[in-house]
Amino acid sequence: MSSPIPSGTALVTGSSSGIGKSYAQQLARRGHDLVLVARDAARLEALAAELRAETGRKVDVLPADLGVAGDVERVAARIETDPAITLVVNNAGIGTGSGVTGGDLAATMAMVQLNVTALTRLSFAAVNAFTARGKGTLVNVASVVALASEAFAGAYAATKAYVLSFTQSLNGELKDGPVRVQAVLPGYTRTEFFDRAGIDPARLPADMVMPVDDLVAAALKGLELGELVTIPSLRDLDKWVAFEAARRALHPELSLASPAERYRAA
Image (cartoon, rainbow, N blue to C red):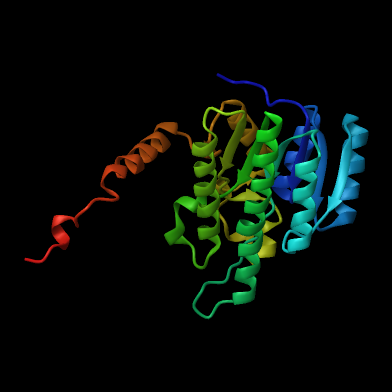
């Protein structure tokens, strides 16, 4: 059964472009006030002015580089101290075309800082603040590569697998409480991401690249439907249900007092 996303203020990271910008636009049109977070202050101010004029909503701008620990703490403090915030969208993230062998270590570590460390810190802020307030929703934007790590070089897929696993773990911790969580797994999406990652989007099959507004609209619909994990491209939901059932079927044999027969000496 579908239920509307509760009103309030939404804080969206990476909101100056791409998926984050579309979240900001669509949430404002749904009646949310906003706190926009990204590095590019000029872009944020332009988007804020556009949304105030179009929707009449209150839109605050919070410029921050989530690759810098001090800036992450400033955003966390806003979540923790602003009781109007009822929704946090952890969207900010980067990729790198670099693998591990001969790869760019500095770029990889910067990616881990943004995709994993900053997201974890802001999730802690959101979950604890929302628990104290008795309501709130946390959306963590992962990627379908979390389910296909072997197809991608380097650590990008691993960072997104962390986001998925972390969100599932949070859901288990928060089950039956007032705080909701959702992991969104986009596939290829028409944004600036590919340029920043050094990937030519023209090389991607057109039928695999989703328009960003369609992606976000699907993610919001998944949130309304109460989904923990939303994969906007997935036609057959039974495949995900079967995948999760197979994963859970492993649980009874993941930790036993003796090795499996195939590992025992003859």
